[in-house]
Length: 516
DNA sequence: TTCAGTGCTCTAAGTTTGTA
DNA sequence: TACAAACTTAGAGCACTGAA
Image (cartoon, rainbow, N blue to C red; front, side, top):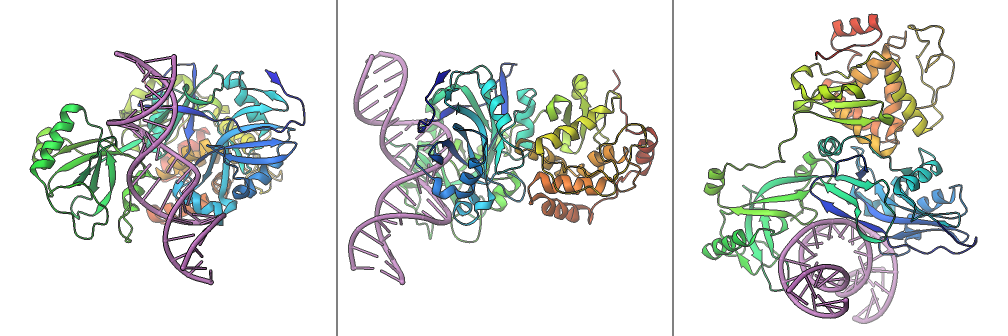
């Protein structure tokens, strides 16, 4: 570790750039984080104050006034923090499209998600192991503020990736735990992205020597131009495409402003693999606003296989993402629990880690519940404790919660008369909770676990509301309510399934032991 | 004061150019 | 000859600068 003299003005460090991979790496040597969709940035705090730099080293402190103010509150003499500046949308996901507007108009909506610490109090930390750097960083950041720590998601990479995909996130970043920080491209950090594959009609192609070849694509049916895509076919397919284009030379579509060296007659269909913008459902729905040629393909597309419809039918190709595994798992809350998403996405269960092997039995997961396996009541308690500790957002009291009827001698988490700190969720966990809410299991299941620890009939409701409100920093409650409103006409009763609820009340927890 | 032009952010991969 | 780096492309929205 190199030590610099105190009072030295720290300088921008070129960020480490992760390598794009198809699948995240497996193994214990890697830690995994959510990939946020925002601006890569670097906060520098030294004797000269706080500065915030862009990925290329431009000083954008003046654009990030609120974040600079927040960074000034960090308890350190000097630090260089690597992270991403993001804005959350109504769904609680980072929204790149809203970021530019927020920078100029909604400073209060900006967040800095910190994921690495390069320098601290005169010490250059770049030669330390990634895991150690992040541990120090984690201890520096108070939860619940404008600067958030990007929590690692322990668990197996494939399962995390599956749920990241399901949650509508952009992707995930895997970091070698023992790696040093080195500027520029590196394979110590790997990013795996979630793509959507859709079919579009080919309008024309741009092909010039020395430049990438593009396919201009239109919405099928309407023929409306939606954007261009990189053509990444192999040599054989590429030649086949050029041949097809030559055979179907056509005129430019009416009203088309863009120019293409070669327009083609309608009838050629291309499959375009593109990144999402927000949630998958909103990608297309919001991707065609009524003001001309919108661009649902935010970034360059790849895998633009071009076929005519007949050939497409023969090949039996359809749109959509690759088939998801029948069931998968994700560890949350300090590794105590695992959420298991079964086939159809409606069945989410909460299991102890040691029961992970039963994940492969989708037929058993038809209960649409989050259940506790292992008969250890401390497990769900651990979940809430962990989230509370991480969030650290004081202020609100949880009404209605009373003593623990199951164990009257033991202090209850939500003891009556004892102001309980509000539960909150650090960013990386938000989408897990959002996912649960979207599947309609949040209130019924997590709340149910809490409910059975209380003697108040509706004690869980304010808890969940508060949990949501705080977890999404003012955004989530409104959205979740409207979602429930649409689906269920308001909040559901604590349990839809009365018998299930009664069983739970009597037994304190729903117990489900998988048959071996 | 208005308008036009430029620069900035994000992204990926083919092509060209430069270096070892 | 092989590899690495730079350049190119698209889109949106905003800030900034300079000219009219």
